[in-house]
Image (cartoon, rainbow, N blue to C red; front, side, top):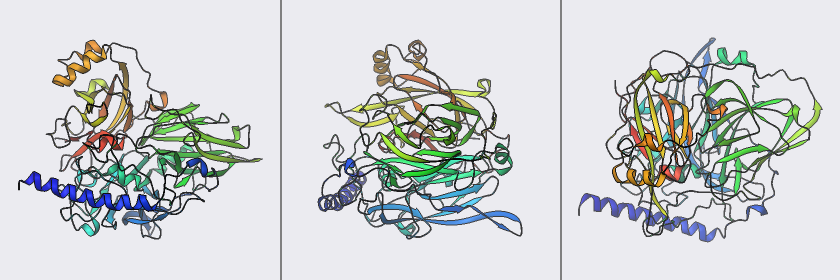
Length: 578
C-alpha cells in the first residue's frame, strides 16, 4: 500500500472513531437547546484566575517558569445549563477555566511556559480528516500546540501548526521543537492572548475552550497615563458564541456543507449563545466611574459590532497588542475574530442605571443574517446610583509609535484570497495565493525590514488577516472595479500584476477607522477590495534587534483568523531571512 493510501486509511479510521464518540454524545444529549429558554443576565461576570510570569527575590524581579496544562473537565456556562465538557487551560484540573488563567508579564522579564497536554484519547467535538489535520499515528490523543497571538518571539516558541504534541508528549508533529516555550516580553506593552493552533484542529480546540489572556505590562511607561488599573477596574473580556445541547454539551454540526467532499467541515461556526469570560450573557455591577476593558473576540467566525443600548461610548486606548497615539471615542466598535479592542468606559456618563452591551453585526460578515434576540445581546452592566471621586483619567496623549514609513519598504507583495466551491455552489476550501501551507514558501521578509502587502479579497466574506511576528498599519482600502473580469483572470493565472491590478483598483475608498490606524496584528480585509498594509518585521517601540533568531525553523505563518477558513487551508508559511 502506498504511503498516501496508508495515511488516508489512518485518517478515516481516526475520523470514524471520533464520529462514534461525538454522535453517541449527541444522541444521549438530546436536542439543541433553545437559547431563549436560558434567562439572560443571571450569572455574575467571572474574573479569570491570574498567574504572574515573573517573581521578585530580594527586591529583584526575575524570570519565572510556568507549567500550564490543558485538561478535560466540566464547566458551568449558565445557571440553568448542565455542566459542559470542555478543554481548559490551568495549573491543575481543579483550577482550569474557560477562558484560561490570565498571564501577567513584565516588559524585559522573560517568561517560560511548559504547555502540558493532559487531554483524553478522543476529542469531545467532531473532526474532519479530509482537511489537512494533525493525526497521531497511533490514532490516540488530541494534538495541541499553543500560539501566543501577538507575541514577538522565536519560531520555536510561536506554536507552528505542525509543532503539535499529544498527552505526555507521547507523539509529536513534524516541526515540534521544545517542551518549554520562551516568551521574551521585549515588545511594546499591550494585550496578547494564547490559544491552540493545531493543524486542522484549531476551530474545534478553541471551540472546546483552549483560550486565555496574556497581558504584557510596562509600569514605567503605562503608570503615568493613569488609566484605570487594578483587578476591579481593569478587566479582560473574552467574548465568543456557542450552541449547546440540552445536556449541556457544546453543539457542533457533525455533517459538512459538502458531505461527499468534507464529511464534517463547514465554512463558519455560529452559535446563538453569547459567552463572556465563560458565562452566557453575564451581568456586572459597576460604580459610576471609569473602567478599562480589554475586549477579545475569541469566536470562530462571528464578528461583533458592539454598542451600548443607553448610548455609552467607547474610549479606545489600544488596538490588538499596541497602544494608540491618542484616545478615540466611538459609539460602536466592530471586532473580527481575534481582534482586541482596548477601551475605557466611563459609567459616570450613563443616564440610566442599566446598560446592555449589545451586538448588531450580520453573520457571516458583512452581508449575512441579521442578529436575533439571543445573539444580539452580550452582557448587562448594573450601574450603582451614587457618584464618587474617580482618580483615573484618559490622557490626551497615550503612547506614540513610529508612523508607517513607505520609503522604508523593501518590497511590495500581492496576497490574494480565494474561495472555491463545489458544483452546488457551496464552499469546499479557501486558499491564499492559490497555495496551501504545504506549498513552498513565497513570503520571505528580511529581519528588520518593512514591506508593503497589497491584500486582495476575491471572496464574498470579510477575512481577518493575522500575521505572526509582524506588526502592520493599514494604509488604504480600495474597491476593485470590473471585479468579475479581474477574478476570472486571477483564478486563471494568479498574478496580480499581469491581471492589471492597478487598473482594477480604481473604485471607491473605504476609510480606515481612526481607532484602527495604529499598529495591529489583525485587520478586516473587506470583500471586493484591495487593502494595502505596511508590515514591519522589527519592534515598533525601539530600534533594538530581536533577542532571538527569527530565521530559525519552523518559521512563522500568516492566515485568515476565521478558524474554519484557517483549518481548510487559508494559511501560508512565512519564513524570515537574514
